[in-house]
Image 1 (cartoon, protein in one colour):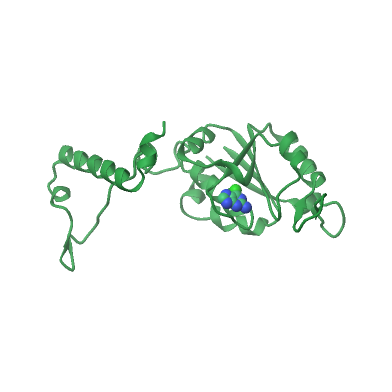
Image 2 (cartoon, helix red, strand yellow):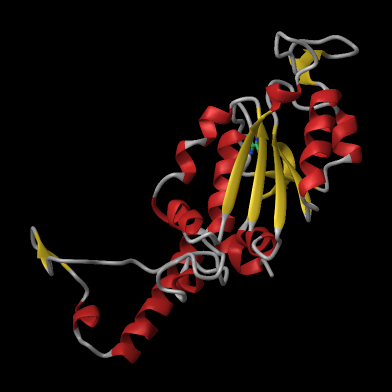
Length: 226
Ligand code: 6GU
C-alpha cells in the first residue's frame, strides 16, 4: 500500500513512521509513506497557503489553489482509491473503517490546519472525511499518523505473528483480556492460577470471559455495533 500525505508541517510526520511496526512495514515494502509539504504549491514566494475567510471571523482557511494543485500533481502518478481529509467533523475512526481502508492500494491524506480547508476542495476532491475522536487537535498531522498506524499494522505480513491482529481489542468488538509476564509473584501480587495451568483450552475460555466482562463493564456500547 502507498499512502501520500499533504501537510503544512511535514516535519511533524517524520518520526511516527520511523519506528517499530511502521518502520518494519516500510522496510518490507508492504507500506510506503510519502509526506509532501503543501508549501511546494504555495501561491507566492512567501509560501502562502492560507488566507482570511470570506464573511469575516477569526482564523485562516487553507486556500483552494495549493491543495488542488497538490492533489492533481500527485494524482498524475497514481490513481487514489480514497482522498481523505482529516477533520474533527469527519466520520469517527474505528476498527471497521481501518479494516476497510487496509484493503486499498493508494490513499491520499490531507491534513487541515487553522479553521480548516476551503469547502470547495472537500466538495470536488475529497472522497472521505475522518476524525479520530471528539476532541480538537491543532492540526490533522497527529490524526494522519494515527490513521496510518491503524491501517499499516493490518497489512498482511506486517505483524510478526500473522494472527495477532485478529486478537486485538475491537477486532471483534471485544476489548482484549488482561496479560501478565514474569515474575509469577511480584510483591505478593500473583498471576491468575489458570494462566499457569498449561491447560490451553481452559486458558482460552478464561481469556474470552475476561474480554466479555471487560467489554460489558467498560464499553457496553461496543456490543451494539455491527
Ligand atoms: Cl482529524 N483533526 C483535528 N484538527 N482535530 C481532530 C481530528 C482531526 N480528529 C479529532 N480531533
